[in-house]
Each structure stands twice: as C-alpha cells, then as structure tokens.
Length: 322
Image (cartoon, rainbow, N blue to C red; front, side, top):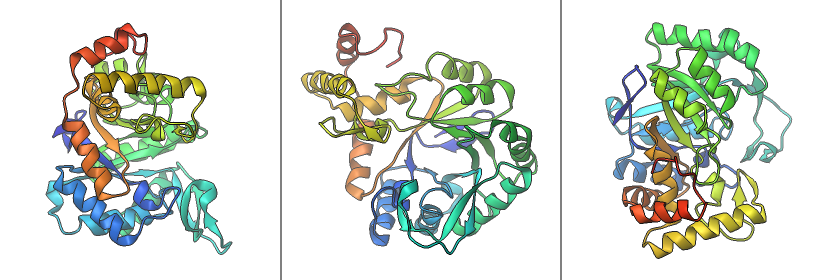
C-alpha cells in the first residue's frame, strides 16, 4: 500500500472501480455486485472508488453494503463531488447517461462550496460511512471557474477539518488535471483513459508535473473501455466504437504479447502502473471472474523483451517506462 501524495492515505496498487456495479450500460444483480466486491477483497484489493453519478447512487449503496463486514481501518474509499442528485418524478431510465437504473433522480452540476458539502453528506449516507478517505472533484471540464474558485477551496477546508484525508480531481482529460497539480495543493488526481498503451496524453505534462509536485496519480480506464482487454471488430475505445486504425494497433500489440507468453491485458495494466507518479490502477469489473482475471494479470510480470519489441515496432514511444 502506497500513500497518496503528502496525505499518507493508503491505496492498494490495484483498485476497484465501482461504476460497473452501479449498472454501467447493463444491469448487474444485487448478489453478483456483492460477490464481485467480496472477490476484490479476497484478491487483496483495498482501494475502492465510487461516485454519486454511478447509477444515481446505486454504486455507493452497493459498495458500502459490501464493505460493511470489514474493519473500516483496513480499506480506502474515494467518492466524488460536482454532480448533486435531486429527486425527480420524470420516470423512465437513466440509459442516456449510461446506467441501467430507473431515473429516480436527476444530476445537477454543482461545484459550489455548499454543493460540495451537501453532495458529500448524501454520499456518506448512501455508503453508510461516517467518513470517506478521498474526495475528487468529478469532471469539472465545463465548470472550471466554479471548481477552482469554490469547489477546490471547499475540499481544502474539509481536509483541514479532518473530514477527509486526501483531495483531488478526477477527469477523462489530462490538461485540466495538470492545472490542478500545478496551481492547487491536491494530493491526488484520477486520470481516466489518458495514460494507456493506446493514449499517452498524460505523459507530456501531467505525469512529470505530478512527480515534481509530489502528487499521486490514480489511473482509470486502463483498457480504454474494452479495446485493450479484448481487441476485436466492434470493440469500444473510450466508450465509442474503435476506429480501424486503433483496432489494428491493438491487434498488433496482442500478437506481440502472445509471442512473448503474456497477455495484452497484463501489459495494459503493467504499463499504467510502471510510471513513478502512479499510485494505483483502477479496474472496473462486473463479476468475480473478471476481478480474479484482473488480479492475475496485474500480478504476472511482463517480459522486458515484449516492451522492446513494442518499441521496435513503433507501437510505444521510446521514453515510456515499462
């Protein structure tokens, strides 16, 4: 377990991304969700990430229920603020926002100081916890002014009060995360899908800035939503159908992995974790078998010759750590 930035909040190298048990895209049954978290625990995972956005609170409720049987001091939980959930009677489902749940609530963007506190209080109630260890500002892409002017100072105050142990921002981009690292006193940033075998946009500025400032990075989306887990026609890259060019790159990587007796999944996870700024890699799994597979892949060393051939083939920049 390594600590996040200067906060010392511990995270396991492999973390559990709980969006999937919030019924991301398709339904996951109550028992299966519970067993998936239980299997993650059995595999040594002690860092669990969730958010109100995931299934309109379902992810938080399920995660809190599954972790209740374990001593609170033995795991780390992160959640997020920026989307406040408000009850609605409009009916229907939430599939337009990616979750197979009834549309009982609507999301209200709110990075105000009051919104941050209210959102966190509601998360604690759903989780059944009196505290969370890490809070991220969630996707402030179109709300930068409010996030920096009100949201971040509110988190800083919560940290100073001891309500949370570590604070940061979680996004699907590297540019604004770099600004958080350079211009604020965050402990950690969560960067999804921008430091992978196929997308290294975090490499040039975010990761070097994090090393320089002593800020930890948590990587999400190591498989770019599916392409690096199972490259095939129709596979998704960042939640849209992968282009022919990206599919070809992934298939070439898989062929090289096969030749070296490893897997593309193992390489994808190893690549993310190899950078010195990275403290943990989150995996989103919907079944006990998927958790066991990710843990096995993460534990398997990837041969140095694989990385050498990847570079020689022009599929990985020379300067990338691995």
